[in-house]
Image (tube, rainbow, N blue to C red):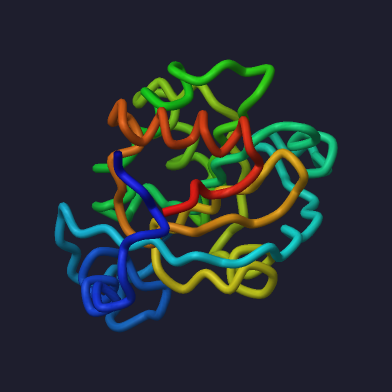
Length: 197
C-alpha cells in the first residue's frame, strides 16, 4: 500500500526539479509565469500534523465567489494548486480527472486552484482537457496560493480531512489515479487521518 506519510524528507532535493517555480527567472509569454526545469516521476509528501486548513474565499472561472468552508464541509478534499504553463501540472491533470471520477462526490471534493493570470487561456485549456471538478482562479498566486498557503512550486496538492484539518501536502506531479492512492484516500476519509505505519 502506498503511504504518503512514509516518503522521507531525503526526497526534498527532488522537489527542486519536480515542480514549477513561481519565481521569475526570465521573460515569458504574456499571461504566464516562468517555469523551472521539471522532471517526471519524482514525488514527495510532507506530513503536516493536525493544522486547521484556512478558510478561503475562492473565485470561479466566471468570477463568482465561493466560501471554501461551504464547498468543503464534511468532505475529504484534494485541493490542487496548478497552472496551464506548468508541464508537471499538465502531466498530472489526467490523474486528477481520473481521481475525481473514482471518488464519490458526497464524500470527496477534488478541486483545482489555478495561478494562471490569463483567464481566457485557462478556460480554453480546462475546456479542452475536460476537467470535471470545481476550478478556481488565483492570478499569479498572489491572493491565496502564496500568502495564505505558502505555495512556491507547482503543482502542490493539499489533502484535507472532512473535519477541515490539513493532513498532508504533495509537491510535484503525483499519480492520483493509481488504485493504491485512491484506496489510501478512502481510508483517510473513513478515519479522518493518515493511516498508521
